[in-house]
Structures are given as C-alpha cells and as structure tokens.
Figure 1 (cartoon, rainbow over the protein chains, first blue to last red):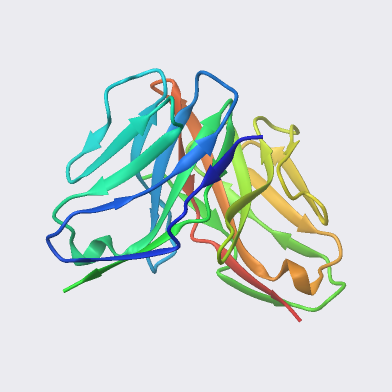
Figure 2: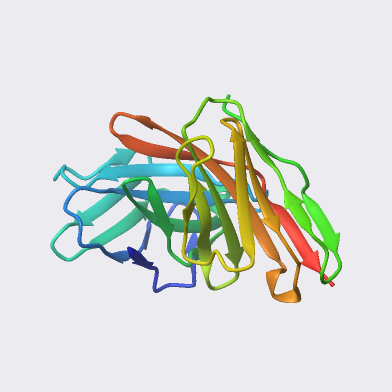
Length: 112
Length: 114
C-alpha cells in the first residue's frame, strides 16, 4: 500500500510571508496522482491543488504551488502571501487506482 | 455545488451498541470512501466502494462493515461499538475527471463511545 509522510506536525507563518509544507510518499506505481487538501476549523476538507505524476510541470493555483520531485518522491506545497484564512490543517494525499491515502497532516497557523 | 451529507455531526453511543453512520452524495459519483481522522495519524482509510454492492477494505477495516445498496448512499456500520472507535469519521465521494480523481468530503461525524 502507498504511504504518505508529513514530517511537520505544526508550522506557523507571518501574514503575507511564504511557507512551504513538506510531504514524501512511497509507491511502486508509475502513474498516480498527488493532492493537497485543506481542513479549516469548520472541518470541511477542501482540495487545494492536484498534480499528475506523469506531468513534469509543477501545478499552481493562485497563491498555491507545488514542488514535485518524482525521483525523490517528494511533493511540497508552497503558500505565497499567506492570509489569515489559510490557517488550517493541510493533508497531503496520493491516489493510485481509486485508492486514496493521506498523511498525518500539518497544522498551519498564520499569524497577523 | 456538490454535496456530501453525513447524517450526524456529533454522536454519542455506549459500548456494545450497533452504530450506523450514513453518507449521501448528490453527484452520481462511482467512488465513495470512509475515513477516520485521529490527531497525529491523519486520515486512515476504513473502506471504499467503487460501485453499488462493491466494497474494498482499507487500512483499518477491523470492527467495521459497510453497505452500498444505492449509488448515492454509503453506510458505515460499527457492529459493536468500542471506546477505541471514538474518533472523527469522514465520508468522501469522488468521480473521475481529467483522468484524476477529486474527492468531495462531508463535514464529518464526531463519534464518542462511552
């Protein structure tokens, strides 16, 4: 089975600054998908960004971008111009043939 | 907007009770999932289903069963609730678009077993 590791249980960043959340994963497959999900205090999980493993170009969504290193099995999330509303738990996830697996999460706090 | 609805936001049950957690989605998605979320452990997959009456075990199926009689509904059953099943339970559904799956989540059920 795939495993997903997030080594930073908690992080904080000042408003308007940039922060990077780390994620590594282990899979024997060559074709799979990677995701970052956000869970604010409301508990509603929201998809932040998605990356297809066969694409070399890193995905971006407005202030969110990823650094995908396939050989290293690394998939970090960069949040630029952090906003107070970015305060949440962030989960890295992999998808291989309908099998979705999540990491333990990183709690991010954006400080005013 | 896609909706994934979980029947209860908070639930308190006693040890040994049979517990049903219901999840309904309105997007005609093929895939549905049940996760439990515990601090420091993230989301762990209990069961998933890729079609009506089909189910697959996830990482932690022990003590749980599921039912999917209709495409829109995926139920998680705790046959005899135990205190170590106190947790947040998240249901999700997903459909394939652009060759990748995007999951939509319910708001979660915080289950306490006393």
